[in-house]
Length: 161
Picture (cartoon, rainbow, N blue to C red):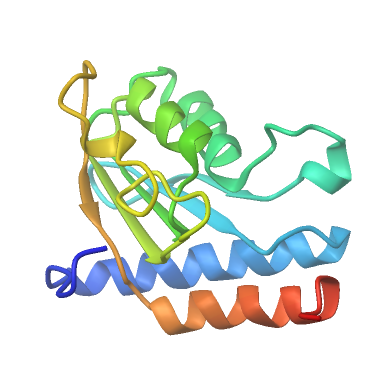
């Protein structure tokens, strides 16, 4: 985790608000509150996702994967070049891999994930130069809000012993 994240565009904060709203939708099915949006090249929201693993029984139903699927359907292409993925928690290896495969050039996230993060915490899939595509990573946008939402969820679901 870099000590001083790069400054972010004010739009990133607005987009993160949408991702936070999506994250709260996961709470309705008692799923981990993670939300994501894919923003198109001209600022339009192409896809929104929230964790739906509990609702669907699908282990791949992570917020980012669902937002990417919905964005690809809206764009009419799996190549999401020029888009930005905004997510409340640092993507895991699966979600970072999906982002790379979708050709996402920029990933903005809120809270770091020291246990499973793949944008610099545990792995750095998004910036791995051995892959065929890599992304600019902008961490820490509304970090406290994103982390607080997750802490509140886990305090009631996995209390510390």
